[in-house]
Image (cartoon, rainbow over all chains, first blue to last red; front, top):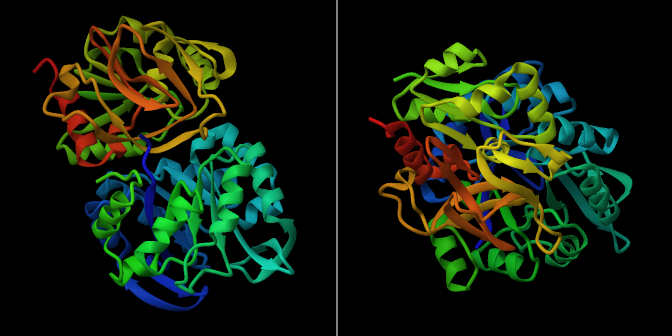
Length: 251
Length: 195
């Protein structure tokens, strides 16, 4: 059976790993290549690298990092952050990235999803959606959750699927950094609505939260950062517990 | 040993290059027919859309070359699918090496299948030392149904062929270069063939 995936996310700034608590107040959690190797050895199913640096050197630093990661690890990884063109994606894929994740650039220019899917295939196009609830509506936000858009989460999810996204990475801004669990109700609704895999993100605090997001949230994969970086949850232990709950995982 | 990865403008070739390097070998990228013919092992990668990839093969003349190769050839993912008779994706004909037609998963399951799934009923030197039911990494919307040339089976909506072999031609729907240490062992087995 196809397994549920556990995906550590490494936020990268100037070539180093950081993790934002509610997307501000960054802390250093180590060398990305070293962390990537550790996670791969511990049984992570995939990795996500999210580049949050904003310097002019960023692209070159990121490409160097992608090459180092791809030469070191033998599991798939996704790169996101500041990707806004077909050329950006081409460079990352050529250097060994398996997928790219686009967020704001997809909202600003939805055609980019079609262009990427056509040129590289849907399988490498992950559309990341950050959303939070405003007056009972899930509203898509940009710039790490700071800027609200006019878009409703579910309408946007449907549109990105139709445009050729291969996967949706949904981060609930209401849950992110809280360690109180994933936004399972919204996740389950998303999973029913679209027919592409959904990655749950935002809110992981303990092992039960992962169990819940797979069972109640119907997520195909779960992504987390700090609980892994600070060793609050070991991937091996997590997967064993998931299996004990009859959730299919790769051990 | 000379390993050539066929370069026809499709696919994430760098990951395969790195995987081969981790196994202690070097591979070269080439679309030169003479260089491909002279290689000890040929890897035929592919990620993307089938009819577009097939057009690239036709334009470069590789369409006629590949089925005539005599050394071990390994098609990966779309590479494997292109070695079949035809594909529903873009309604394209394939290289006709494997006698099977590639079709699409139905909306009863999430499409693409993305992630780790098991391979079983293994029967090929490609899987020497590999246990039944190991997990491999797969990303695909189209698949080859079970057929006489099936050497590994995977279940997603239906049981289908996750690897094929005919004579010196091998194909894996999964990505050995992205399937952890077991995947690397399968790649190593391929590189050992005929030694």
